[in-house]
Amino acid sequence: MTVRLRAHHLLCLLTYVGKGYSPAFTANYDVVVERLAGGEDIQIVSGPDDICTPLLDEPDAHCLGEGAAGRDELAAQDVADLLARPLQAGARIELDASTLARMRKAFSLGLTRKACPGCEWFELCGAVAAGGFHGTRL
Image (cartoon, rainbow, N blue to C red; front, side, top):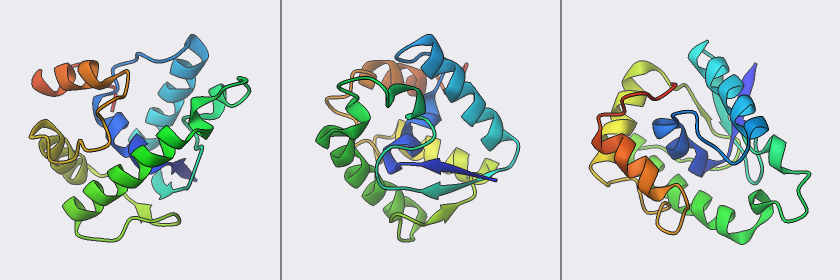
């Protein structure tokens, strides 16, 4: 199977420590992380993805908003530059240990964080990166 992810969630995965918008969101996120840890590849999608699923029934689901789409554009460019390959909807990525380490290093150096300012998780993600990604679930 394949995990469907929007581009900015490629960055969110790097610092995920089990915190989220709700218990249902976190439980779903844990399942997505388990799938990735089990070797499933990633397909980039435009708009809501497998991580967004528990939030989509909310009346003002931020996953559907322009802010999330803007983060996707910025993250896609940063990750594409890092991986030296296009990263548009439909692209597939294998998130092996080497790629994950490379992405975390770039994130901790601030090279792939253009999408992050304004996000409510910005400070938590920065602290996780500064702590060497200790406690991350992927």
